[in-house]
Length: 378
Image (tube, rainbow, N blue to C red; front, side, top):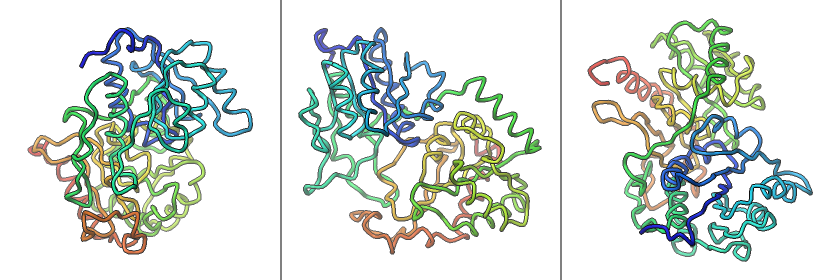
């Protein structure tokens, strides 16, 4: 269905999610919107640091960075975007505060999901997917895609496609060729090369990502230490360990328990922007369920992701494939016998991440690396 001239935005503000993974999962939708509105001015409102993910993108005309904490944060954010005279705001967020920002910024049309008591602040209330009076288990990429469908006056997502048949993923409604997409700038590449030179990395390497905002999502540090040793000893890969500055102690603990010489990326001053080219050149990444997983997928990096008491179907993502058709991501869950009708979120003990064995991770790593090392598989 074409967009009528009366509803087609000329100046569009995208209010982006708060976290690395969520912003990355929004990029198929942002790509779709840019293609549908080639002449529109499109800006994005996002938190500090998240601009490093999208800096240099050709999908957006401007990035507005705002600080969400503080008594005057909402008013200051509204004042920042008001001079751009946006006629439409599309809220990827679910919060009351971000809806209020767009309202007091005098943006005439405000589109978002009708939840968290913010319906009165929206002009276009989009119904969120529900099942038995609860939020339906829906991948974020489709959740965002549905918002664009409303904006562009196109058919909405049929939520029935997400009927679970496996405990690791559900079918996606986005087109089969849609992908996560992040730009790499010259500054990103220069910083990544600086880090590799400082670590004396001249051979193939792997990246481990042992952190996560929830400790229950973290595979044990001693197992990551043994995995680092396994990668260097058995696969001849140097190991870089990624994490936020707040996770430096965790990384140092892993390095202290290792028998080889893994490298701490925070210690070398790694940035979110530099992580993109580092991942793009990495042989493999092994990670918990956290934001860098999605960056790796956007960089087409072979990927092993470990899920404990968070259900992977909330974050089913499109991933690239090897030439033999196999996906470049393997998902390992704590309890693969969990009935698909159940959510891992509701079974924290049964789905404790400690139940994922070292042997399972080593075997998945071997299988993934076989694809990258065997030319006939690529």
